[in-house]
Image (cartoon, rainbow, N blue to C red; front, side, top):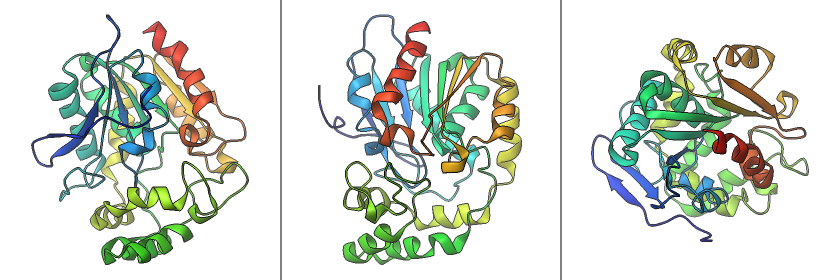
Length: 282
């Protein structure tokens, strides 16, 4: 089983989208498209992608303004969902399963509502239904400055001090305290290629996204598996969010006890154990 992603390919357009495609897949099994969280890139799925690729055609792509994909003037949820539809229509080219984390989960949800004929199933990892609210700019200012400086030492220092979206397995609070998958020395490559304008856009908020999310919940017809962390540990799916998600016509919500927002990164085995039965039923 390969330990890394395949070679990146480029889907031309505005913006260009870097994607990684395992090819193959067992007969009759749908492609699986992986959508990463904010401030990440497809390598965030390196501990999941190879496992899926043993049975399915696995496709991951870098969101606009992230990784090897192009930068853009628009960083709204609408734009991210439109990119997902491009990947489905031009790369997957058949009904697929979307697995998205945080922002990626929302883009997957909206795309599935827009084009139900393209989606066989949805796995939403800790979807951030509060996405329309603006980020607190001061919390991301050092990181933004580190990215804009284009100085590896400056960026590594900023990343090391950046607070995690939820505590690590041993209570770590910053990337600098972590070792392994989310260690600062590794994820600095995530942040290095983020467009600073994306951080600016998140600090401004995205009010129209609230309507998009509500409309998508009303329109999605595919089976949905929601994997959620504990809100007290930084998980995004609080009780009101779970209540909203349970309006989906065919939805299962599973909690990861003792986990926050970063489920597949910290608990890949548990993540795979939860999604495999769901995938086999599609």
